[in-house]
Structure formats: C-alpha cells, structure tokens
Image (cartoon, rainbow, N blue to C red; front, side, top):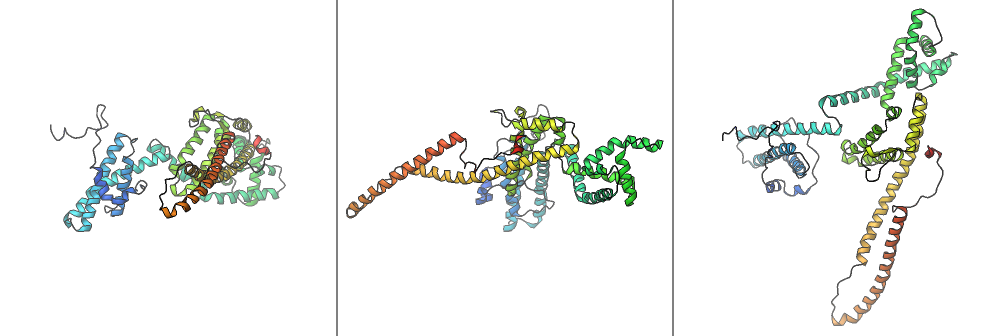
Length: 448
C-alpha cells in the first residue's frame, strides 16, 4: 500500500469512512497538566495572532479540549478535528516546557512554534466561527452577515436617535403653539404619524400636481406649516420623521408584529428559542441577568400558552391561552397608539408577575436550605450510634448519661419525623414547599 493510499479518506466522499485519530494516552495529559486537570475547564479559546503562547495559555487550551472530547455527543468530524487540536496542544506544551528548561536547541524553537501555532490558530478560528453560528441561530455566513448588519443599523439608530428626536420635538412644540386645525394630529406616537404620512403620500403628490387641496392630507399640510414657521426644509423633515419612526420600531421591537399576524407558533418558537439562547449569549459570570431574563420569559410563556402535559419543552404542542387570544383580537387592525396601550397593559401585568416570581425564588432558596438541613437531620436521627467502650470506673456515670441522651434523642427524633411528614403533606396539598401569600388582592390587569 502506498503512502497516499494510507491517508485518511476525505469525509466529503460518499463512501468515505471517517477514522477518528487517537490522541496520545490520557496519562500524558494528566502528566502535562498535573493538579490543574481537576480544575473546571475554561471556555473556548480565542484565536491568537502570535505564534508564541505562554505555558498557562497552552494548559488552558489543553484543559478545554480534554473536557470537550470527554463529551460523547460530539460529531465524528468535530472529534477528529479536536483530536488533532489536542495533539497540537500537547506538542506545543512539551516544546515550551523544554524551552523553559533549556532542553531545546535555539535553532529549532521558532520552527516548532510556527508548526503547531498554525494548527492551533486554524482550529480555534473554525471553533469560533462554529460558536458564532450556534449562538446567533444562523445556518450560514450570509445569514450571519445579515444579522451583523441589522445590529450595526440598530447601533447607528441608538447613537443618533436622540438628535432626530430633538428635531421632532421642536416641530411638535412649535405646532402646539400654533392654532392649526391639524395640530392635534401630532399628539400621537411618531410611528403612528409616519404610518399616516405614508397613507397620505399619494394624495399629497396629486395635490401638488393639480394645485387643488381636497382636504385629504391634513398631516402633510400641518407639518409643512410647522416647517415653514421654524425654518426646516419640509422634505428633510419628512425624512427625519420616517427615520426616527423606523428607529423607534427597531429599538422598541417586541412581539407586536407576530401578534398582528396572529402567528401563535412563531410567538411560541421565539419565546422558547430566547429561553434556550440565554446561557449561550450571556457569560456565566453574569448569572443574575440570566436568572431575571429566564423568569421574565417563563412568565410570558406561562401567561400566553397552555403546555400539553408531557410535552412542556415542545413549543409545537403549546396552545394559546385566553390572554394571548384576547391580545391578538385587540391588536388586529388596531392603530399603533392602541397597539402601544395594549402592549403597555401586558407589560405591566407581566412585570408584576415577574416581581412576585423573583421574590418567591429567593424564598424558595431559603426553604431549600432549610429542607436540606432537615433532610440531613432526618438521616441523622434515624441512624443508630455505635457502642461506646468505657473503663469500669466510668461505667456507672456513662450509663446514666446514655439514658439521658436516649430520652432527649427520642424526643428530637419524634419532632423531626413529625416536621418531615408535615412538610410532605404541605407539599402534596399545595404542590410546592414555600411560604403562602401574605394576602390576597384582586388585580384587574390579570383579568385580561
């Protein structure tokens, strides 16, 4: 067999069989890492441009890849790739240790570093790209690029939106001071104003062409009068209003577009995906943010959907609750002002429920600690202590103390068993072990 025939066959071939290369025995990883192998594995490494890695950086990479390879759920292709990466980490770490100890000729140092650094960088860049696609729920480079462009657009809107808002505010203030028939039309949200301007646009162009005002464009005429009074150029002001309204739509985006369509499965999918993506998007050290957002999304899910028993994690088996049906009915064909009011009502109700859940979560933690201690105590009181050996001179004294201890222990055991049974009965009756509400009040916003 030639050396060419002995190479691993390409995974792209239809009849190819992927052979996952074996790394060196795990003992060598333990030897290289020592006690550090017991530490929690770090996150995926960031690609480095330099060919010189410190020993600490190489050990972190080796710990990371060792923990990933211990997961049996990874695909054969990724396993093959990471096996090569692990070997490169070992080679690099061994080389750096030899350099540190002066056991490697100076002439070989740079050549060796370039060799394994290229492998590390290539695989780290590939891993980083895979994580980018996974965390953004995108399937390819084009979709990922589109998401980046959308984020950059939102960033620009956020940066310059306040300036646009100032121009719009000046116009509103000026029109409120003028006794114009159409002035009250600008008391609406700018998204509503922009929508109405879009509806009036054709009629306004016809009015300009014919020179005849048929009374179909009150908003255009009002804004034109305001611009003339302030000294703004009319068309530029129209563009500013449109950009500012678009900015508000993007920055204040929520479920309204999906609710307008009555797209219940899409709403369920969005909520489920967002819940699953939280731990991918937000770093572990910001656990408090994750907890609050998890509670918020869960509150929305519980308010808007009824989950089929046994299929709680499958959003396709969820059905819309009365709250969501009512919201869809109210928003359907409604103007932006009414939509905003309905969403504000929903947001207030969810915010109240979120506060209750977060408070309950803290109490549950305290209760878990208490019950955990009670579990330990229960195990303790149901166990039998060992016999105690004493000298003859201490026999009478120790026997008397043993009787006192037995009596007190019997009382303690009975009390703990009763408390334990009471806790079980409470949990069975009220489904969870937590403090009851401090009071019951009627909240009309929850009737929606």
